[in-house]
Image 1 (cartoon, helix red, strand yellow):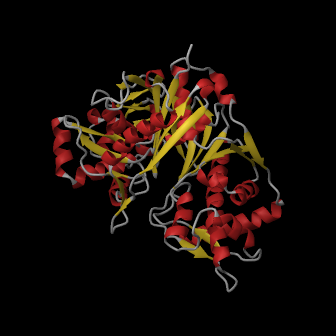
Image 2 (image 1 turned 60 degrees about the horizontal axis):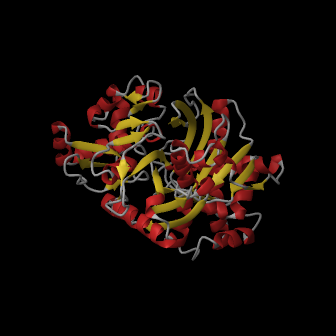
Image 3 (image 1 turned 90 degrees about the vertical axis):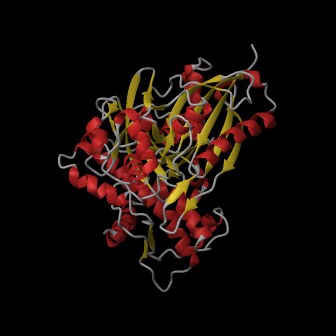
Length: 492
């Protein structure tokens, strides 16, 4: 029997990747296309959803053309997506109502403060597992409806679609036949009850959103519809998995058992701990979400999200001009003075988990006469590890399980200085897989499993490089204590 292939689409904050997987779930090739980051004078961050969809089509075309595989041998498609980015579009015409509001954007902060006051019983957190925050789609969608009459009128007519980027791509790829999302993405909207596993009508009401306009929620490995990529394939093929990008990475990392934890070092970071089939409501500033629903069974996670991790490196390069490329950070960090006490708290748009302070402001703290470019770059790198350690400590407090091993992925995981510092400051083993496309890998694995192309042995294909702690407890406590003091100085 000739080889069949899975196309995985990883639609992330910075761009869109199309990945081709063949026998035994092996990655054969990939194509990446960036899209514009639209930042206005208010600091509001948006993406053009039409540009994103066109990039999906073009990336798939380039992928198949580059590899020369037989288009008839494409068996199916999986999708992973940037999760909390939200948008609205017309259900009949498919035309978007403006740009998508990116997860980083806090334009709905005032609206969310209003919802907090109305939510006297705290139902949003107790039912969705998420504290009210402009980070999540509920506030973003409500902001669209409050500030644009056209989608508001469309909602009242029943002609409105709203959702995350996965729903938009499914709608476009299936020519409007599929208006769906999966459990992982639904659980991140702040509109979905993670206990009843349904859209919560009362919470939708708090945000002014009619629940009947929301997409159908499906298992993460469900059949989501057929696509031929606008006629590029000779025959339509099934889209057979959808996962939020961090959930895809958790699956791709093989974190299938309770207690297993991963961190994605992207533009921002998602740190996730698999907690099994029963949800735990956090009391330490984390959120409770669905990892996925596959094979008819639900798995939950504790998660912390950070707005600025890899984005700090971009800021140091593009705005401060401290570096000309991310690769420079490792050398400069190693040349920084050991006795310098500089910390960077990257609260450029407030702080996410576990602090949830929308009005915190960024700062370098502890600057002295010895502070130079290397010390500033090192502080920028180390703030990534400190923030992730905050999350890991909160996870252990909520679950009663110490994180013994952290599986990592994303661009910054290539930085050996950062990975060793992460191991040191978190006091845990850090494991880096030999593959870099974990979100796309997870979506591909799920689709291939659903289509019977491979079994669970596919999760054993990755090999790992390991970092172990090198510093003593006293040094770890001193450094982490300095970080906590720096954070206290920027909180509102």
